[in-house]
Figure 1 (cartoon, rainbow, N blue to C red):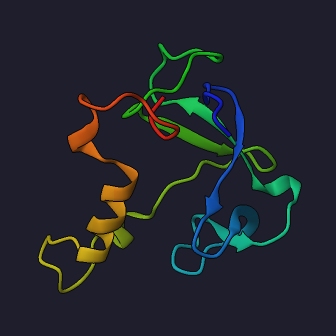
Figure 2: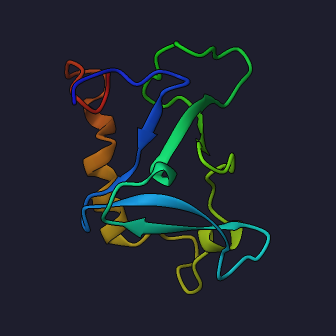
Length: 125
């Protein structure tokens, strides 16, 4: 903890609420059979490591990842890329509104009002 993340690093993604890791599988996703399934596991395996890649060609391995950089996460074991199926981004009945609980969670992760005023912390190197 407290280290900078660089392009090319292998990282683990922890789901804090359940204390579980994201794990890539070879199985088809339930909702979109053109995608692989991602599951939460409480134990460590080689399938929970994701490589951080640059979203643009000018980002090189070893460069630091900065706040608001676009990154691509590639599962080390299977070579697949992590993404969200587009139809899950559109939630019926919301009419373009984001639920309050998601907004509260986003504010905890990305405190935009503090970006320029506060010194960097462990989440924003």
